[in-house]
Image (cartoon, rainbow, N blue to C red; front, side):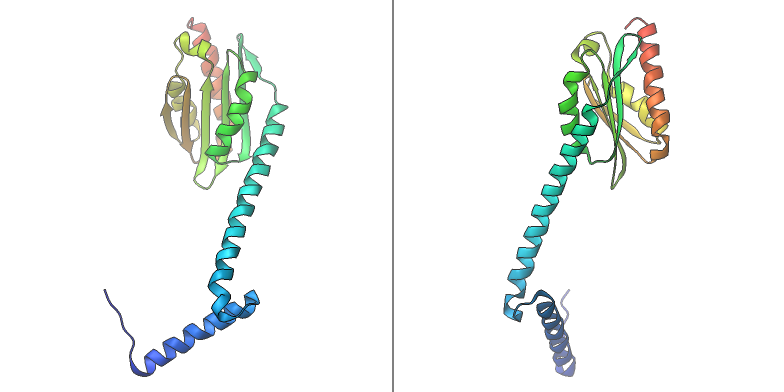
Length: 185
């Protein structure tokens, strides 16, 4: 679709565009011809600051998570943590830093992001060898927060909307672990 402005309308459209460019240039403290370059530089700077903030946040989460201790549930170490505002990529990084602390056990991380609640569950290879499946576990846990999920035997991810139900989801995980142990797995 092509649109055109002619006559006095074209003059007014050009004047409006020039006024907007002049206002932007004044705000940026540069000449109008330098405005696009300055805006590009500011956008690059904003992206760099966002990356730096994300790295600091990730480091802070790792330090806070390092202080958490797994609970022993019927001989299986279980660590379930609510990381607060955390996107899935940051959660996976935190999980990698914690997996050695939950040998032979279950690690569940929850994070709140733009799209609701994310859960990531990791099982130690020892549990997988005994017949446990992370995808099946996370489906049951995710249902508590109004979500769905799945994954591989060792690692699974789910999403949901009800962040207020995270404590109940953590309790559900513990119940599932007890039940699975009682079934002889």
